[in-house]
Amino acid sequence: MGNICRSPSAEAVLRELARLEFPQLQLSVDSAGTHGYHIGEPPDPRSIAAGRARGYDLAPLRARKVDREDFHRFDWLLAMDEANLARLHELAPTGSAGRARLFLEFTGERVQRDVPDPYYGEAADFELVLDLLEGASRRLLHQLATSR
Image (cartoon, rainbow, N blue to C red):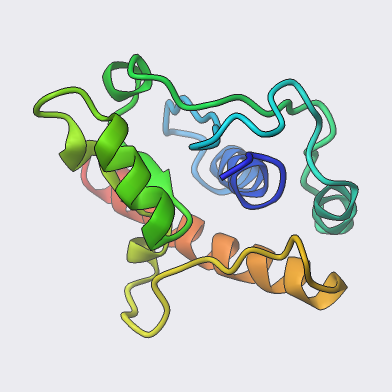
């Protein structure tokens, strides 16, 4: 939503796992929020700390808002939850809404569809977000690597 917790974490996780585990993939990865609450701000310090503990560097990232051009620049726009997915569908240019999907669709499980927002939570909530993002990222990267 604001691009300071989940989305920058997803960007850092996906980028680093691609670099380490799927170096053959040529990816363009970026994160953005569906609302402009924090444009230009760094990720939440708790996201930075949780990511750093696992080897992900979120510190250089800055919040931005999704724009219509993103639907042309990227094959997929991956939302963290149903509310943000609905907002992406509203923002999508005609015929582009299919590019927006839920990030956790790539876990291969249908138990949990949303990455919970850790903003009002504790350290364990930020760890859970990373757990979910790592699992979905690995599965997504595997899918991309085997489909080429």
